[in-house]
Length: 137
Image (cartoon, rainbow, N blue to C red; front, side, top):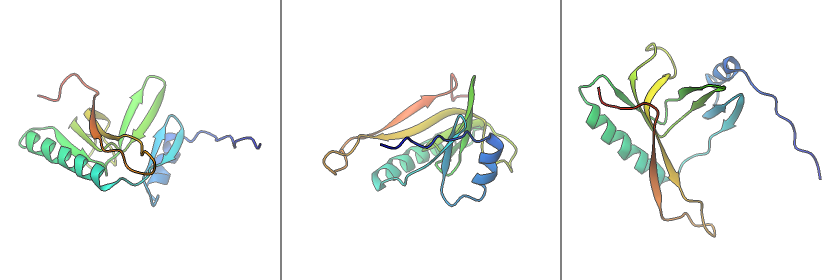
C-alpha cells in the first residue's frame, strides 16, 4: 500500500492568478484547490430555472442574481473559500471589473442523490443557503 501524496496549500493570490488561465472551473477551500465536475442536464435545468426566478423577482431592484459562471468569495473566521454556486444573489457588488463578489445574501446549490447501480437517482432538489438575514431591501 502506498501512502497518499501530501498536498501543499496554495495561497489565495496563486489560486486567483491560476484561475484566470484555467481551462476548467476550480474551487478553493482553505488553501486547497478542487476541480469541478460537469453537471447533468437535470441539474442545469433546475439551476437555470432558479436563476430565472431570481432574475424575475429582483428585476428593478439593486440586488442581482448570478449563475454558476460566477465564483463567490466566502470569508470564514479561519479561512477563505471560493465557490461556483449554482446561483446566488448579491446586493452589494465589488468593482465591476472584479471576477467575483464578496457579499452574497443567498447562495443556491442544487443537490443530487448519488447514483444507484449506475442510474441517476430520481430526486434532485435545490438547497438554499442564506448567508445574510434577508434578501429584501
